[in-house]
Length: 160
Image (cartoon, rainbow, N blue to C red; front, side, top):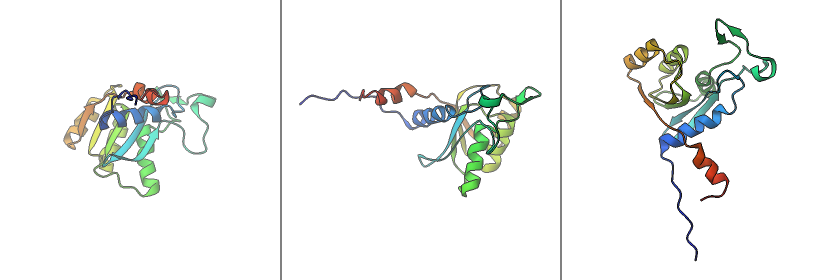
């Protein structure tokens, strides 16, 4: 009987970081594709990506609506995930957030208010010193992680 070659198994941080990257693929704002997942007890309880509100046009279809250097059409990935929790009655208290890019100041404030316990990000993007200060004051653990979409592609191609 032929042995099946072993493959590397992702650890949980890598797995959820990779899931946030998959969510970013749904982004509808071309300025930056951001995705996130909210996780409790190794289960995804909500997800989000940056894009337009329900019923509005998407940036990829009609262009970005930029005011003061920011696209105001897109709701940020973290906000979309937290709003998904609110919409479906899921508490975010004590959960972890995996996000492709460091949260902006407004998202940081929302994460703190929602009770997110830990934030894991892959890419540092315009890190805000006050956002970091607030995360420290709130006692929220922050760590950079790495995704491994290449392992997901290996599975798709049958390289098990």
